[in-house]
Length: 146
Image (tube, rainbow, N blue to C red; front, side, top):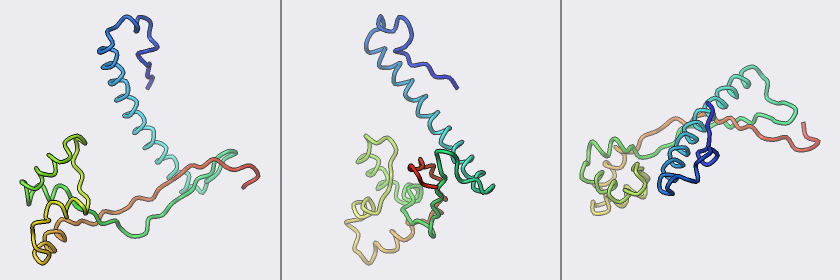
């Protein structure tokens, strides 16, 4: 994919500043989508390189981080289905972030009015274990290191 920055195109400076901003915003969205795609390609290449036993080059080495076990975190879809009014309160509180997230502190905030004894089954129902992916990291080699 070839991306051309709007400010590099002839006639750009003649466009209204608000339209320039809109064009640059669209350009940034394309860059972010391309960055996500390229990161996925890099991850796939690193995975294949690891399987082939090829973990270094002249200037780079592949470092593999293995996840130990699973990560447990609240499930936003469970909250949305079981407690729609509390989900909406979370959305309203996080409206500037566009996409609600759910952390343990959010559960404490949302269910703060529920006695601890009654809160435990609610929280444990919403907490879900998510498998953690192996991470592949390309690092520049230091001078003189192998």
